[in-house]
Length: 93
Length: 223
Image (cartoon, rainbow over all chains, first blue to last red; front, side, top):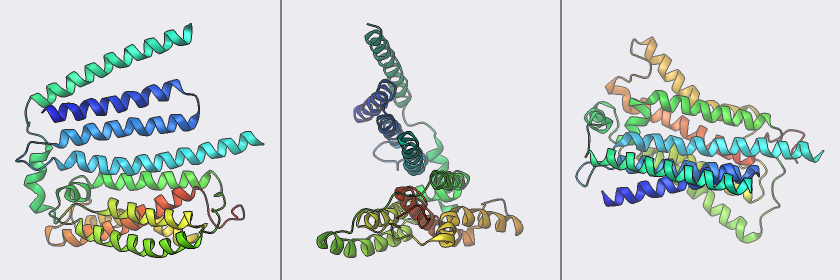
C-alpha cells in the first residue's frame, strides 16, 4: 500500500512536471519531451493500479493498455517530429 | 510582474490538482482489491487460446483495441511520409561500429522471433518483438544505411499494412464462417492469434523503423 502510494505520487509528479514544462516553454522540442514525460507518468499510475497484492496475478488489462500506449506514444512523437522538421524547413526558406 | 504571477498561479493550480488526484487514487486503492476486469480476464484465459494473460487481453478480449492501434500506427506513418522525404543517412560507420552492427542486427532479429513465440505463454508478444525489430532498423540507420534495412517501394507499403490487413482478414474470415468479428473458435485460436501477431510484429517493426528514418526513402529528394 505504502509502495503503491509512492508510485502514484511519482507518477503524478512526472505528469505535472511534464504539464508545467509543456505550458511554460515555447520551443516545440521541449513541448514534445514534456508530453512524453506526462505520458510516462500516466503509464506509471496505470501499472501501479494493475497490482493486486502478493497472492493474485497483476491485472492484465492495464498492462495491455500501457503496452499499446507506449507504441502509440512513440509513433505520435515521430509524427510530431516529422511535422516539426517540415515546419523548420519552411521557416528556413 | 505578470509572468511571475502566471507562474505562481499555475504552480498552485497544479499543486491543488495533484493533491486532489493523489487523494482520489489512494482512496481508490484503500478500497482494497476490488472486483475489477482482472477477475473476468483471469477466468476467461483458458478460453483465449493463449496462456499469457496480457497476450490474451491484447489479441483476444480487446482485439478491437489492438486492431485500431495498428490503424493508428499506420496513420502516423502515412503522416510522416506525407511530411516529405527523409534527410540523408549519416556517414558510413567506422570499423568497430560496423562489426558491432554485423553482430547486433542478427541477434536482435533472433530475439524478436523468440519474443514473438514466447508471447503465447510468458511475457513477450508482438509489441516487444516489433520494438526489437525496429531497434535493429535504428542501428542499421545509425551505421549509415539510409533505408534502415527496410525494403523499398511496394514491399515497404505491404509491410506497413501487414498488421492491420491480417487483423481485418482474420476478422472477416471469421465472419464468413459464421463466428463474430475476431471471435476465434477455441480450436484454432492459438494459430489465428499467432499469425496475427506475426504480421503485427513485422508491421510494428517496419513502421517504427520507417518512422525513425523520418520520411520517404528512395525518392528523388533523399540522398
